[in-house]
Image 1: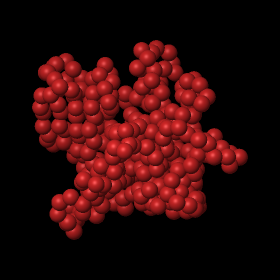
Image 2: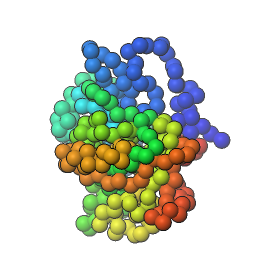
Image 3: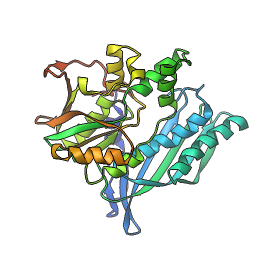
Length: 323
């Protein structure tokens, strides 16, 4: 069986290079943590590829926005304040109108979050590819390995809307109130930076949802060595997402990627603090499950305690992926 993304990383890149005392957290979380200048920096990098991570016909302004948004989401999951970015961009050719729009989308989100683009690289190739490296400052960082039995499981926003939007976009659907709302969630993800910072000292563990709620819950479960139970009826569903139909809406919420919401755990006794943090960040959150006794893994149940079979957990980078 081919290696999964995380199996590949573990086999070929984990532990690579020098062992440094200023590295607090290396491979295996949303961002690395290093000590610099008397403080802690969170470092993250993501690559987006045309027709893999964004449709080739997506508005270029939205592509620029998304390039940075997906990386800021990684910092949000650590509770970091973004500060610097590097951009490596591969283009087939120079289309100045397209580049101007891409720049505007990137610039708007960077300014909104106080991020300076401080360098990068530009090359020519057969497909548009962009890698963004981001760094930010953090105190009391959140990590994936802090979940404990008895914690509640929470999610921000409405997971599944972006995946539904992608299906609509690929099917050529562009108009209608619900369609436009879902497509906007695909093209214009909102990194939950303010929520991440508000949750520091409240959440016990956190991860951003990029590959799908169940897939990323699996990463949190594995790193914390705990079992996670998700209540399917507890998942938030917006009117726009509900418009795609019953089980389809559920499947998008559980397995759809590209949401860039935060999935996090917190002690049951901290529920009021979680809600206060969400209010302070003006971001809705919903309790959708709990951390329970058992081996690492994620199970989906209904309100009657019946376990549900879910055929797909999330986006698979390689054929061996999946939880």
